[in-house]
Amino acid sequence: MEQNKIRTYLLYAIGEIALVMIGILLALQINNWNEARKETDREVSYLIRLNENLADDGIKMDGRINFFGQIQDYGTVAMAYLEGSSSAEKTEWDILLALFQSSQIWPLILSNSTYDELKSAGELSLIRNEDLRAKLANYYGENNTQYENTVGILPEYRQAIRGKIPLYIQDIIWERCHQISELDWQVLLNCESGLSEAEITPVLEKIVQEEKILEYLRFWMSNLTVGIDIIQNQKILGEEAFHLVNRELEELN
Image: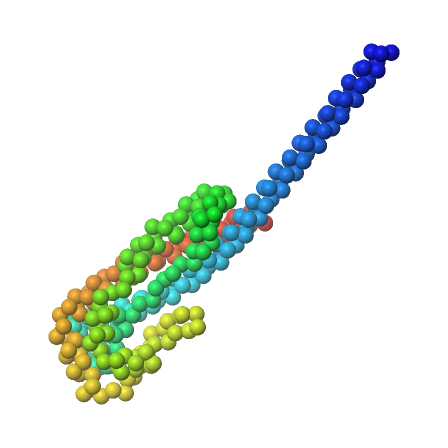
């Protein structure tokens, strides 16, 4: 009888312990699942924001490529004049406008707030796709630096040419030949000045006499060629990262 009671008690005790252990394991499993779900939710939130940043960057880069292409066209006209081979089809105003417009700049600032937040919070590991992490590191790192060292600089040509053109003529160009939207979107326009040759000719003569201006313009045009290539490569990197982000979102949702 005593032995049966002890055996029954032991079985009961073992059953109780087993139930407690099962409960603990289930609680741990649920907790792990909840933590994993939270991490996934945070990853999705970051991916959505990265998606928005990359899409915004793509629009910015398209605008810069077109804009810098326009500057190159103006620069071609300006260099032809400074080198003594100006086309007869171009008026003096066309040449003066080209000399000024080829000094325009439009900085490209990538939308990197989400990536910077991931880095500063030490949460890059939330992005589980290693290929995507590598693409983002390249996109926001080395390639961006290459841009800053080419078309991201303030060219010496800009200061040199604008120092030679009277301010009232520059005001006419800003008013009639340049547009900017509320979103900082720049557009360069062909326009008429209303100025006489007597006003334009002396300005062009002074510009031609300054040899450094041609040197500065050549260097700026060279930088533009390299810079546009860099932006185009940057755009490709951004598109690749954008598609990877979308693929991750589809798999996680």
